[in-house]
Length: 441
Image (cartoon, rainbow, N blue to C red; front, side, top):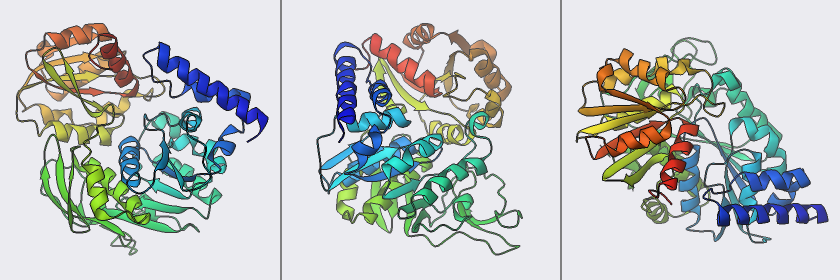
């Protein structure tokens, strides 16, 4: 490591120490930002002794990263990760800053924002890419899903020796030939559920409408084109059965072995399958993967359970129609009366354009036993209007607005069970407000 890199790393470590010691923030991004301001080449020097795994896609990166880290920790002792989800360059640098010096058998498991791949991939020189999915996400930032996929393709082409483990159920991920070794995961079973909405999908080869032998949600599943013969690739890692979908957990089979995941929803079975695939790629025994899944760790903002006052709050971050509808399907599994809290921000990190709310299915919640609705965030009026349009009574919606009012409304909510949906920055802000009031550490 150069003298400049050593100085930059020390400055970043000091910043991290000061933030974690004297503030309530985690300090996951600022230390890397300061370090990079001293040495713009720091990341290359920090990552050179690591086998790097890059996890990217529009949905599921954070939980997939956490599960993958848990899985590989069963075999490797020297692992670093940006577990908090700080997935742009400064956050990735931050993950390396406090890592011990290493020369071998070290792995970095990194969640990387799709738009940040071009800024880090040449320096990281990954051994493996994991592609979770691509759905319409912040199109004001990225444009079409095809353009998002081009970001992933460009990164893969830059490191042709890196392997790719991709979601084979997504037609887009089978639409280009690459020099990289490719392996695919997906569902090799149908799911008994009436809550799934299939999106129309067109063949990447001839644009004809795809047909499905079975599907899971959105445009994911066992697809084929009746016009040109384009079809799903052979799967290397499979979900072969789904036994139970509950509001708190799921039970299912991967390559015919039974697993339990303490995170609910079909979309999280995909995240578990991605982590399982990486584990198998690195020859982690199946029994060890099962143990890793049983750690029952919830990533903040992803089915995070928060106890505040006498309330049990289940917090889910949402950011696009597909992801939100999957969370709504999870909420529909709730058997008890509950309060619904919906927090909407439209800062750049959330996506400024709020038209995506029109493509969601809040209407599917109107028959549930929702005793009260609380809305908040800087776009509280838009959130409230969308729920009224969906069929909810405006008189039963408390448009609390600012977060202190939201927390006060939660304190006086009529139910002990609360489901909270929040866009990314709203999730960060409500968590900070709950930390300030002593409900979270």
